[in-house]
Image 1 (cartoon, rainbow, N blue to C red):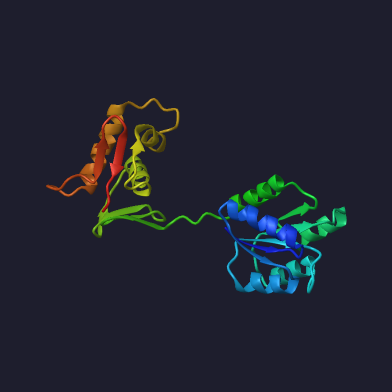
Image 2: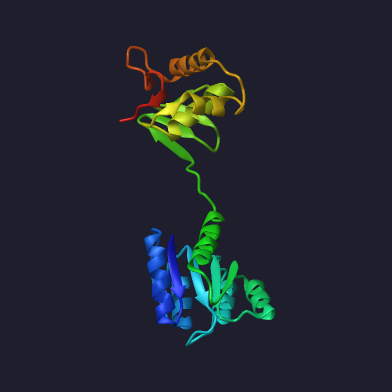
Length: 223
């Protein structure tokens, strides 16, 4: 994630920055509330870690102003205040979580990860593999602009292979997508549906796009 830390304590700010960078995040640190507010409203951050006691503008005011501007960035409040009214006030203003000082760095990271998991996952509407196209919104498959009519199981297998193009897909993965997790499905049944799918997406006289990896599974090959 791209994370903004608004914290006037240099030692704490540097510690949090180093910890988050080691976790693979991009981090920017601001030491003033007014500057932090402007950065939140003008830049693309995925999370703001916001202290309450800040020069220029306190964290509660920063939070109120960005929410008044319809800014929905997740905010983790970070403060030495541990009185219940302050916690309730911060949450009522629109904070997503609240952590009081002193805290263990592992707890801080756990809160950041929890907020990260709540971020919406944007699924691609279209998936392409060479001249194959899958419209995941309308469940429509096509090759070179020509529609491919698929059964429910064929579509499930095709979507799996398209999402994992040029990667090995095991028979168990095929089984779990086309049938229930605990279904007793023979290899012959899987082979039948793969053959049926091949007959619909391949061009006669050309090598099949779905390759069999002996004893392991299948792979949709895309240049």
